[in-house]
Image (cartoon, rainbow, N blue to C red; front, top):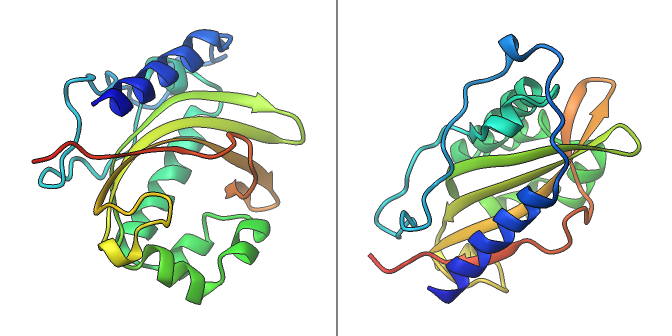
Length: 186
């Protein structure tokens, strides 16, 4: 429980520190959702929504619609276990770090839910930093070595890079190591 509170406190701190950047055309912003309440911690028996949701701040970013579409395709590919679909959402750098056998080993049993984008910040080099939380459900054997659980709550900062083919999820350590916590018991 303390871990969940720390994760939510960290997310709140990062959001509060960020500078608000309103969209030039708010009428085309993607739909928004309220942040997940701190008492609504996913459990291993409650998988949650497979739709990516955004805070008002993220949706009003000039990149909100593009990021929403990209991340929905990214998480859909993971949830479908489709490496070819996932490749369409990733940069060549990220693909190189996860060739298909490695991707299968890491994601084949994974189902991601409750994806919520808190912030989208522009960064140098045609990149964005996307503060996101989500829950992954996977077989214990396929869980990450540092989080051997069947249900994991994640907080991460994803790097998204503009490529010749549009915005793609990139590799890199923009957010350092993601914060993970086991889901609350069901």
